[in-house]
Length: 259
Length: 299
Image 1 (cartoon, each protein chain N blue to C red):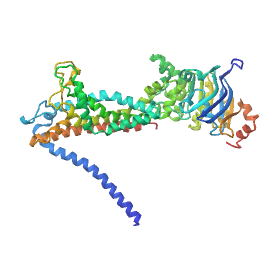
Image 2 (cartoon, helix red, strand yellow):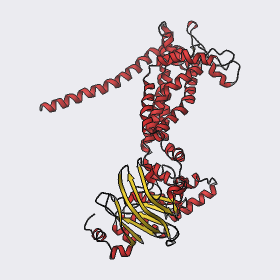
Image 3 (cartoon, each protein chain N blue to C red):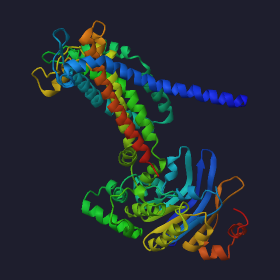
Image 4 (cartoon, helix red, strand yellow):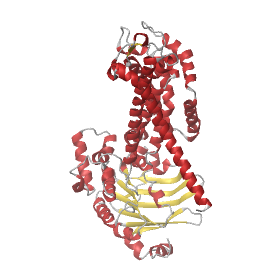
């Protein structure tokens, strides 16, 4: 590698994924630029989430999944790396907030702890920094020992973002992070993403086209082909995708003609 | 009233009666044991019964402390031996075993629960007691707390293993995914997220095992030696106490009831009351833990 634009943090090359003999993703090639937000949009069942979960190899938890092609992080094939080390570099925020049934402090310090940090002061500093970066510090700072499950849905999701940040990843994957939240909480998450992209490369899957248009710098449009395998139809700057898409199918989708 | 309405009403009454019957059976048994034990509590006194170290029905001495100690120690021993194994079994089945192993192991564990306890007793008598007798220790006869604890450990294994497996399984998959996505290894995920989340379910598994252990009778009679004595180290170090003979509360009743009369008989009913109360405490602890498990989940 190395011949491409240096800003491509994540790349896939002819990447396909199979559930047993069923092909769920077909020959996807994409360059995801760093320090930006890339949105993956497309109709339900087009493989957006599956594609997103390829970047931290979460699909491996499903029995019978095989892949072909390459997924590269900083030019290195992630399938040749230690999966635990990979997931430390590629964090993930899930669709439904999933804080552990522990205190706020223990949730955020979970990652640093399993990666070997024991010192209480260091942990406390990491927890504070992560909660600040996730824009939830002011709301929880008075009681970090409170159960994370006592927070509202929107707070839980920001806590989950803080928990992911605490591991100091390079990339953050977000799988419809606001779909379970109300509009106000959604807005806060979107604002948060804008501030996070200074430091991180963010890939977000969303059902919501307005959200993609609002928050992302680049947009990838996926669709299933006649064999029900997910394809990348078009990828480019968000502004271009939403104003002058190159592909007829993209235009039909974003103008609401199907999907 | 329509025909269907009558059937509906009749069934309601039948089911209500069935429900009330099971309730009243418990209450009646409780009252019966209590009534039979009243003379003993009255003449001997609650405190003397509970704290007396001598049980000599012929001389009118009715102290239950040796049996309370015997039941307590054998239960403790069984938990110490059985819990780690059972818990590992539960974790293995819930988190690690591939399906084909699970379909073999789980029924075999359930089969353990179905073996009559007298068969466990036989196994203890023929295999464990001679084996324990090999331990070179003054006064060791093979019969005693160690043999009984081992038998009991095997007997509570299926209860603890299957209840804790269910508890571990009921931990939402989102927690596992969250832990793995943060770069946990599988074991870190199990130890730091899954087990703590299943904690109260596992605790109630342990308490259910406790209840089963306290109530076991025939297998204990066969291997524990049944001597009425405070378990003793026989002059050796503290762990030697497990080589001591002992008698359980359950065994006390079963061994003597056939020939007991008068105050002796009443004292045996009092033994039953003590057992009843102990098991009730254990069971309500289990129930309290389980209801906390439900509340501790995602709101």
